[in-house]
Length: 336
Picture 1 (cartoon, one colour):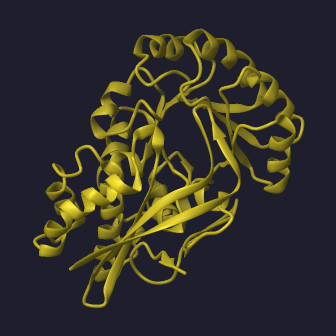
Picture 2 (cartoon, one colour):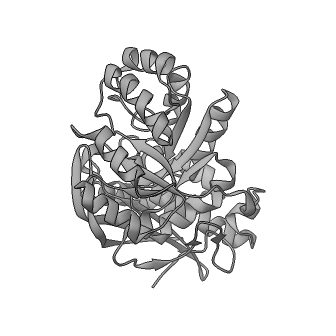
Picture 3 (tube, one colour):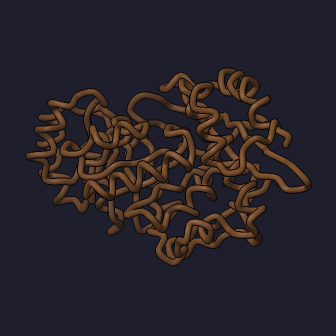
């Protein structure tokens, strides 16, 4: 078994702004596991908010190299457990390895990942398309550029309600809003009363991730369902979110890959919560991996590659009506 990796800069079509950061380029690390002419690819993007850089991801991969190249593992789950200690503080790097391991493993099985997991690709929910914070005029232009049935609207400004009101004038599509921790409980409850009238389906992470008391109030009084994102990063967070949020958004990159992501989804379902998997502006490598587990979900946010000006990979093709997977077994994404 050979471990290798490559760094890519992913240029975005538009400056992408959320409540706590803006970017024009997204750095990403693509990992390759190869043996006997079979290889698997995985990916993780960087994120300054979580302190994840190319440098610290590579450092973890190099520490893990002897373990993965020893070949003393048979399944992705086994490899994930072997990396638990090394990747304890860097789940982003572990995600890239885990996705590559699932790609490699299911290729050896001669099955697509969704086939191995006994999932029906016809049951994939329609992804939303994300509109980052900008001037209202530019946000409207972005919607007109990509006509889509569901938009996720990034908020966290002094004019949040005005933005949604104006966007609503230009489309009948479903809205989802994501405040990225920017509101208080009082703001979230008050805003929900207006947002529900504007065709908003749910609000994602309205409060800071540790404002549990505030979320109790939002959960009780909000007119909209609340979905956890920053409050639900790893497996132990799922139970903490029960009774505070109606749903969780699992980010494979933040959780450490498909292996823990599947466990989080099943636990949330057992608690009666709805589930979503979101992306971190990955290329088609990471997005295609998400698509394979999407039949498990109530909602999905896998528009990352659609936001790129240039994608270094090819993989799943997404339209409002259909998700088309690459030919062949495994996850199936490949570098151009």
